Length: 84
Image (cartoon, rainbow, N blue to C red; front, side, top):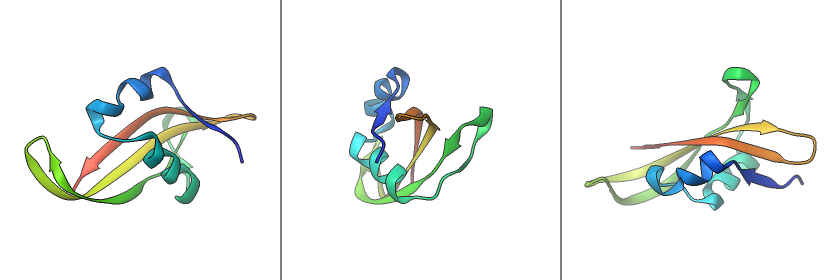
């Protein structure tokens, strides 16, 4: 199993976008990958949330990492989060 590494950009946005490294890893390891822009890949996974985000309560958090599958590791370029 390849290691997963967050780029500096992805790591910097963790708090601002509200995702954890564990959620990103779970999405990459369990969700189906599909093509994304610029020859990259992406996947998405929904997590139970039932918490407040920016003053509103949401029941689901969707984590969508954009990644590059390198020979020795998986590099996460950025991560998007959505709340429902």
